[in-house]
Image 1 (cartoon, protein in one colour):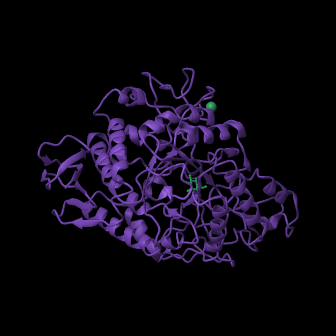
Image 2 (cartoon, protein in one colour; image 1 turned 30 degrees about the vertical axis):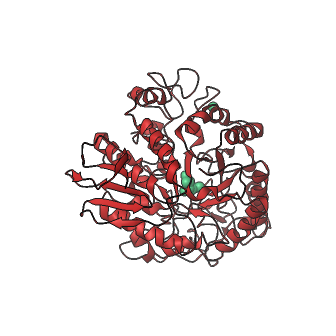
Image 3 (cartoon, rainbow, N blue to C red; image 1 turned 60 degrees about the vertical axis):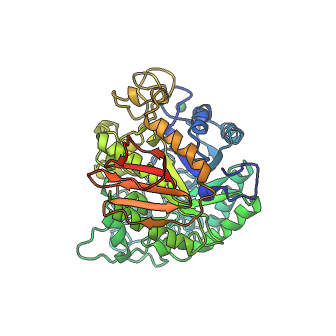
Length: 536
Ligand code: GLC
Ligand code: MG
């Protein structure tokens, strides 16, 4: 385990980081919305689970059009979630429990209720206030270029005097102009503010955004290609593996511009000044593994989410390919790899793997393989309970991408966590009302309370895996040897550990060794949709 008291360790290099989606983790005040005191009270769950750190999604002042990813004040806490003191308490309590804290920073855009955007609207075209965003004129009454919002529809909105502003996401999330020196200066202050309050790192939202090609020229679209800013995807359900592969063919003047790297070099210096144990992880939907590695060069950010793992289809071949490619790319820049199966933007992996018993078996198996790999694993709240994507009723959907397009969005992975009891809100908060997204009525067996009492539960499985992982995470080395145990089997050796994942339909022989843990019942052989850790 990374020693929390040793400021010289790169604690993140082999950490398990648990993503807390603030609105949906735990509610302290009975308004049906999760909040910071709610999280603080539930931190023992994370300590018992055995994670090293938590990542909190944005809890800053925000009108909540994108549930906090539309920030109106980067240095304060939204009253929905508490006060600054509550953030301080959360950080202090987490540190007492040996947990590091990563917070989100959202630099690509602000909220339209940020004081800068209000001032921009009140000011004239061509004013310094407008120059902090991307306001443009258009000659023909159409938007200034053909870019589309990641959430659907045009990426431009017109204001009363006829100018348009760019928003790669919702119209309430105007993009900042990073070529304006006010913008980098403000964010340097934001980083310092939270570092001074004791946070251990940052998760950088849309890290490949920030700069757009200066001309703001049209995106050149192939004939068969839908318009739009793919951002790696358009919504949770359309994230097909092929999209990732084909993206390098896309023309994307809105993403991944070379100037962005200078920003991360300066952020690296700010993190270093705060101490050798502060880190940053990028959300960068880049088109190739090479461009991903550029974000984690030694003088830039520490890690970047490896969405290729999440996008891999259920096959030994595709898992092996992602492992090999990932390790090669991070090795080229001496960074540590990351792995992730779920987050607040994608369909939960139990459901992606088919749902039901088989989906859960596969999810547990893929998790076990992931947790054995060198580097960090990012877990998403509720996966330790085996939660599935919820089919949220149309009237309860609140994702701005749903509101813009009418297509099912990301609400189904954001349903509040069931902690105990037999009916909604399952101890998510006080009272008996449904929380902000209603919970299903069949979650009684999935609560933390119910699963804690059952040694075969998914929660017990995660606890076992994380406990055993501590014995090898820092000592088994960075080298992975992929073994050939047949076409349907992902197998690899890492130090003393052998990992086998059966993606086929029939049981396979286990290699020699003592079984440390399996993702499901085994009896001599390894059944389909099951993984095991062995020690030679
Ligand atoms: C990132 C966040 C997502 C948010 C978007 C805009 O992709 O993960 O939830 O909607 O950025 O900030
Ligand atoms: Mg609340």
